[in-house]
Length: 190
Image 1 (tube, rainbow, N blue to C red):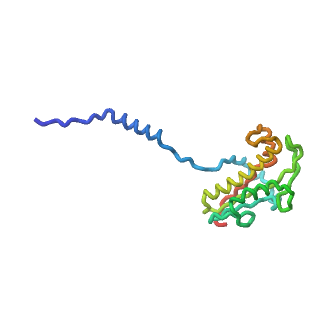
Image 2: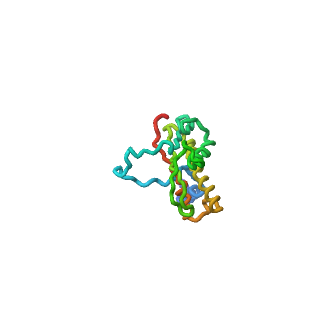
Image 3: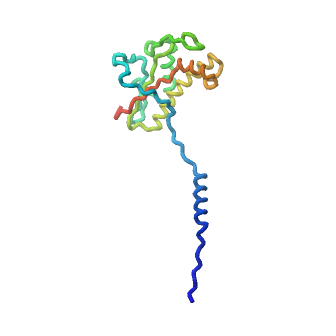
């Protein structure tokens, strides 16, 4: 008589595998990618583009370049990232109407009346080999410069930080300090 080998019950094996799967899905954390929060500009039909004759005045453009060695060049000069925010703020505000900084034009702004608004635009360009972390650091400094200008104006005019203002007051301040950051396509080598 041959002895029969007892079988291992496998009916609950699928249940156990399913529970393990759920356990690992629930307890696993996912890394969150860092990125840029940007509202993309509206699409413009090439027929509606301004003529090349309507060039932006050179003094109205703040040129920021990041090369393949992650060096920062601001207006053609090497600069440290720590100094970028203050330089961008000075450029966008042009508090003393300096002839080397952007022109200003009068504009009727709610809550402010006629206000001299800068025509300044920040142009950011990077090399294809620029590290993403460096690019993000430069981007953050430029955005922070605009946010600080908005916050300072909000505190001076309304006595509150920009984020605590009502939407219509925020819109008025955004008209004075718009976030005009032009990001050109990366070049091969800068």
